[in-house]
Length: 580
Image 1 (cartoon, rainbow, N blue to C red):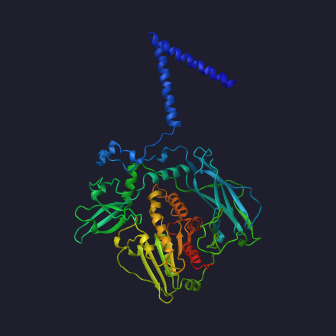
Image 2: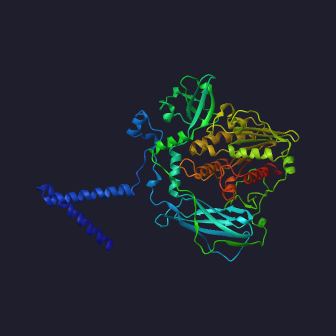
Image 3: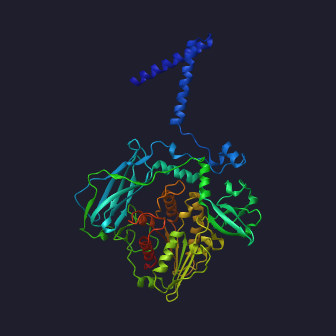
């Protein structure tokens, strides 16, 4: 009744205003009438401004509908009729009240005097903004983990539950006896995560590349990229928006690879000889899209434990093997079990929670690999597997340096054990490739490489493709994975028996905090890859993300030999499994 009465009063007030307005039009307006109209107009303007800026979410034009500002067109001599390919993105500085690590906290839920191996542990996490107010939404990117420094033991969380209101629950299984301490590292706030993903989706070319063309007498360097429909910066020396005829097209539709280079002025496209990444120019692409505004992300920080209990004491009443009933390491197992991490470290040894993996000795490894051809395709993180096997597979394994040209060993490797007929090969995946100058003659299509393998039980393929694709978007990434998946399916139909196919997941990197290269971008690519290959039979994905998230060695895009050794050991457990 009170609400109805209030509404009646409100409607009567509006009637008075409307009737008064009608009377104004019937007679000569007085100063009082003019002031009243000014008040009404002013209030209407303020209400509209409030709802438009504070409450109403306006739809943004699609990237292809955006235009560069007149100032940018004048500075860059860009055709005003051409659609812009570097859309403007909102700076995180405009996002109010982001998560602040030093205001956020966690504590152990329902702590006990002691725990047993295999017990579950839960920690409560609450994130707050700079005003010390609890956030009202989720989406923060964080890494909870447990650690016992004296035992060189650690584990990532089995599961992190986002409650969507600024609170989270991290669940763990306790796998070793001793004093265990929980930690939580905030990598990106939800606001920063949204901003980084918006850049990825709307600016799928945040890095730059160059091609060198030479005929032995003269040489030219021109910009290259995955798309020809983009603006090239001032380093292109006046060729700012090029037509199709002015581009060298090195794309291969069969393999899903698109690659275009600006055509040199005096040489033909066939004179291309070298390739490199150009981070400086890539940064200029991003700055154009951001209207040259400086963008910074908060550095990853540890949250503080505000609970009364900082560590838990775990007793050893049962063996860790009782925690999970694990199968043998047969091909096709998922990278992790539901609601469990992929494993944990104890005394620097990785204990898989996926399968019954063991630490293989040299003699076992050599016998397992006898007569096998192991082919590794991917980036520098799987090149670490190749180099590790070269140096840890006995004295009869020798690497053959096929070229003295600078940089070739970064993308091409071959080793052979003549005594046991074991062959190891490594090839880098094709474009996009970051890094210094490399000859284009040693850049191969991953699809063609897989199609060249004989197949059968003595063929082993190790594959990864992530780090060099964080500068693109998920749509492009999927377009590259699809032909590779099809090539893997074809591989499984060749030869006697099934080839072993192992996909190395992405690993955590150096915790960079730039909009173009964060752990979140690699994490999203990794989730995409796992989902894409989930239904492909006889393909095993090794969860290296979990293997690098909690290790005491810290974070590096190229993990330490300790970690790489454990990665390779798990890889060999799948290669050497006794299949039914």
